[in-house]
Length: 135
Image 1 (tube, one colour):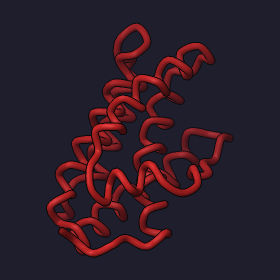
Image 2 (image 1 turned 135 degrees about the vertical axis):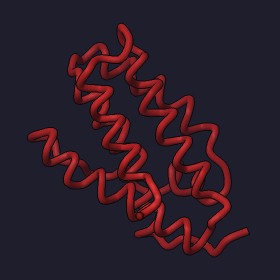
Image 3 (image 1 turned 180 degrees about the vertical axis):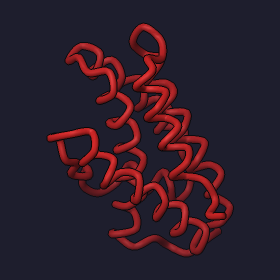
């Protein structure tokens, strides 16, 4: 079992995970689709365990910019990279699970509404790259 995460660290994990879902859903906007996608993603989030589950299910929701996809990316992608660093340092056994969960949630969101659109696929590629091990 790893070290306990601080409130800031938990918020970073949550910002990355929820932000990834928002990034993908934002790539193919539509109010009805957004609602459906949010529910689809929440099923994946419920599968989390340990400190990742604690981070995703406790504390405040992250505040994400809503003005442009670029602004969202500028918050979410670094949060994903930082989340991997935090877990590598404090709970290395949860790194792969966090990566899988975020990618599964992003993929489920993309598929929730008429299949994966090109913009959604591009967003998922950026998320995958942000979660990757540093070279």
